Image (tube, rainbow, N blue to C red; front, side, top):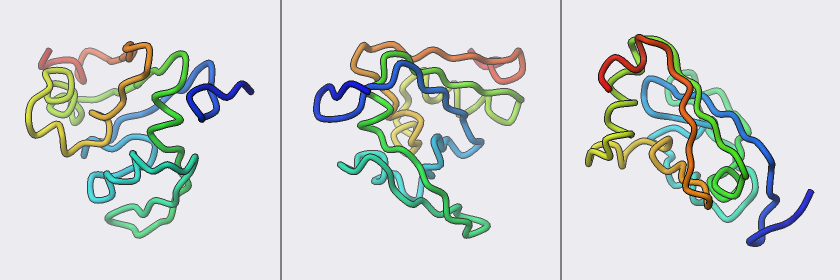
Length: 116
């Protein structure tokens, strides 16, 4: 795998979006993990306390192609806030997904995109 900008460069990273605006198992209460200089971090689910291993933002944003997949009405508000770049979106790790090529591909169903 090539190293570009000091980080591995993946061809493709596919992420999901949680109702709380989390992505890649980085939750709003630990948003600082997104900007970690490490390749991976241990995140903790805010409700269950489950520990999860996640890649960090430097890996995500260094990828050639980044896709965020979201389905369901429960995601509509977060998607609107993130895509519209509202102030509250700054609290959501998914709003920090900004690949170096500047392109985030969103794959949404009718319900999740209902506010767009």
